[in-house]
Length: 192
Image 1 (tube, rainbow, N blue to C red):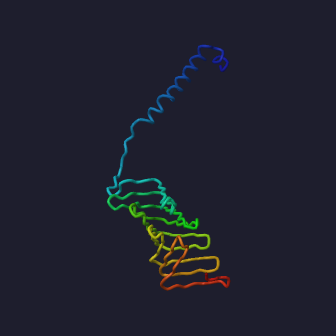
Image 2: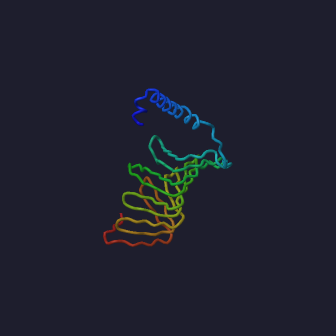
Image 3: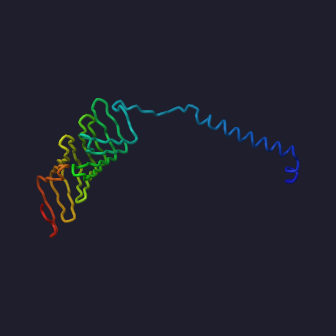
């Protein structure tokens, strides 16, 4: 029977035409079906948001020098509040000594006019010599400082400290711990 199909030219021609017709149908009709208008249901318009972004990257410069580079997984630009509400935030702050300080947090708010920022949720600040952790942190662009009004934990290779509040001058790489300050220091710890 198989020999009959391949030996009979009419059956072979009909079979070939069927395959070509099926191929043409796939080539022409499937893309047309995919490009057909789709109806969207359960579409919610946020009246507070002017724009929602799937990802955001912004660089802030002062006198041509990069002060910080911000990346966020999502950003919602809020109308009338001049704010960008951010998730999964990653900021690299640059010092005037060409050093970097990296900050990560779960959420953040960027003031789109002043470029001041607030960070909340698992806030971690890392530098070559220390790691700082807190629940909430603020950045002020004009003086280029980070400060926390909540408890902070600071760890270095030779010390671990806890304080009620903290201020960090990024350009000077100077941290001031305030309030009730407690610490554990190794014998290798040296004050500058």
